[in-house]
Amino acid sequence: MNASSPPMPSAAPRMPGRPGVKFLLGHPAHLIALGFGAGLSPVAPGTVGTLWAWLAFLVMQQWLSPASMGVVIAASTLVGWWACTTAARNMRVADPGSIVWDEVVAFWLVLWLAMPMGLWGQLVAFALFRFFDAAKPGPVAWADSLFKGFGWRGGWGILFDDFVAAFCTLLVIALWRF
Image (cartoon, rainbow, N blue to C red; front, side, top):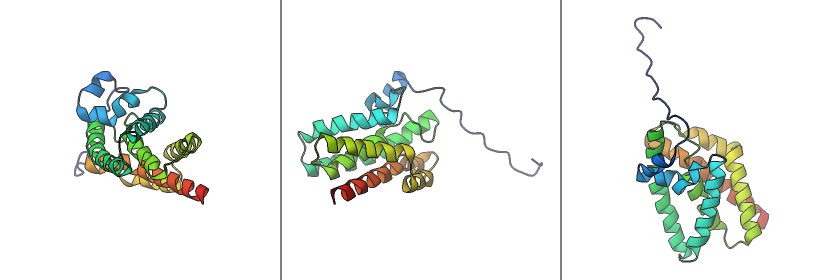
């Protein structure tokens, strides 16, 4: 580096280790972004978050109409955008694995649009969604690389690749049904 070049900005230090209960309960955004504790799982937090989403959807479905579920999903997307943005910033990690609200809302979208399905159909939807979310083939990898960093853009990026994974899941289900 020569004398005329500006100094390189230092990156914010990363949060040491995985977040714990203190972090989870330290801010309402953390509670939401970490899926009310599902993201604290030391093993496969995204899978645990998706399982939590599945159970929560089945419970909500007992009381909410399909239109009301759509409103819940839309509102959860907006609130989740804020929560994921805030939690990632506070963790100082652009897309931490412990943030699972993206899996929750995206899997609710899959179930909302693909229901009614029996247990086996729901299990296939779960497996497909987890495959697309974890393996990130083609369009999911593209979506994952599109919005990176901190702030509102990064918060949207946390959600966006999971919505693309949900779309891919729904596409496979539609082709299967056809």
